[in-house]
Image (cartoon, rainbow, N blue to C red; front, top):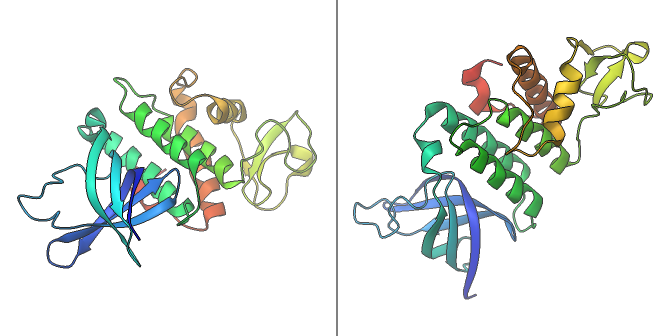
Length: 239
């Protein structure tokens, strides 16, 4: 046991004892971290608001038997613009919910950490793209290892007539391979999803309002199917 340095993005926290708080973070080096911030719920806490969800922080931790204790914390990126807008907060909540569901303790998660960081940074931009969450969900599926097939039929590999989507089969299907449980896709949606899946979160393709809602619905339900859990933070959007 001893002191060590780390960094992380705060996913959530909950009360612990009379004045402490358990703070759950995503670390690129150690995966999901469950730490204790002593006295953080007191009015004069020296940690202030530096351990709020979405904050990117540098930490000094005292290693404990069960939970590490935060002895020092400094803000790297607070994402102030994100916090000032309810829609962005909901979107950021979806991102950290996914990261929390995917990350494991004591397992390096650099790809997931970088994806979450880029997602929060995109939401903190002056004018975030309306489909940044959809793109994040598609990329998160890739981090998990279940990236949907969007350029060719998930069943036969055909690249034409991709008019169906099947969550169980792993992506789009051509009409010839359609199976029970597949859903019809509107024309152009497959291409739009494919662009969102590969584009950088800070440079997404031009927004298409006619495709946006359907794209979010497909991405959300695909990830929920493979995570075997509902994304509660998106329930308020009814997509």
